[in-house]
Length: 273
Image 1 (cartoon, rainbow, N blue to C red):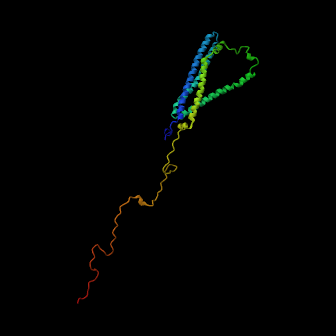
Image 2: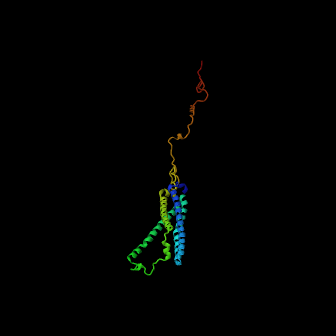
């Protein structure tokens, strides 16, 4: 019996997981498009502010452009890979491919790992901020920056001072989309891990039928014992009654009628006279 013959009917959980995978992939592609649109828009803002500030430092302008492109690549490339990953596993999952289900589990675990690393990396800077507030790493009076080391240039001040409605909207949409992606991926992982879905992806062959007669461990049938019937005539068809045979003839008789006189009696010798 093959795996397809032993596989049960597709449960509802698998069909729901298939559509959620497609929805997650589409949402991820939307996040990629939003990231690219924001990068293009911000590059135009850099060019506009550089034209407004004639004495802008070319290195600052180049640095902002490079940071803009790098941020778009860091944000958009993993999102695009995840979208393609989930879209490629949707059809194998629908058809009962266990490899596709494992790839979905890997994608869900990778998302949790990335979110955990981002949270932990933010916590790493917490001791540094506390030390700065306590004056452990900054000398007294250095916050005033008398030498102008922390003075912001006119180019950067103009670039980030104006309200950027599109930038705020793109960041908000990206954050909401990320939360939705994590929620949908968790729902897909839960659906594919339920027992009905597990039996669909890992089918068990049906047990062999129980033989009518016991067999040895090697598969050889136990010989049937010979049974003696107490009434053997019951296994034969009835026959018509035959006439009873004639009794055998007795001694001294023949088939002819016996003579009137005894053949063994001697003739009379008496004298008539």
